[in-house]
Amino acid sequence: MSDPLFSEIKEIAIRARKASLNLSSATTAEKNDALQAIARGIESNRKLLKEENEKDLAMAEENGLSEAMVDRLRLTHERIDSMVKGLRQLIELPDPVGAVLETKDRPNGLKINKVRVPIGVIGIIYESRPNVTIDCAGLCLKSGNASILRGGKEAMHSNRAMASIITEALQESPLPDDAVQLIPTVERE
Image (cartoon, rainbow, N blue to C red; front, side, top):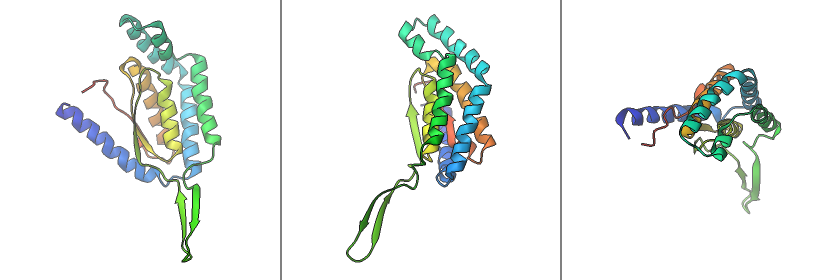
């Protein structure tokens, strides 16, 4: 890995870690508000998403990707609707953070609880399904985790557009902007 690229990824990781500390104590309402802002951002930026996705589709066809791969890459209005619907369904789910999974009473009177807590920072590598960017970001935010996303080169333009929408939505919310970050390069170094 080249030094500038390593430095950039290290900086992303440092910012994600810092964001995770704030995110871990976010309230359910704050997380849900951020998810709602992302859903609104997707709805209001359909044209941008379609334009950026068209760039990915043109590159895919130019590079001779199979029709199945091109189909996975394509963002239709139905798929965009599905991303928005998925975020809104996520809002309706109970907050997993703080849920008591198990309680044990010790003979000495000590009560021990097994409680769900955020992991911190989750790195996710995925390929040419641009809707996965939104799915991963939403699940990580709901569970109180920061995320570093690395999508496939085939969906580079679509993923960057979605990451931009997510960042704008996070800026509207009390959650840290760096709670969701996209690795900006498609290099495999």
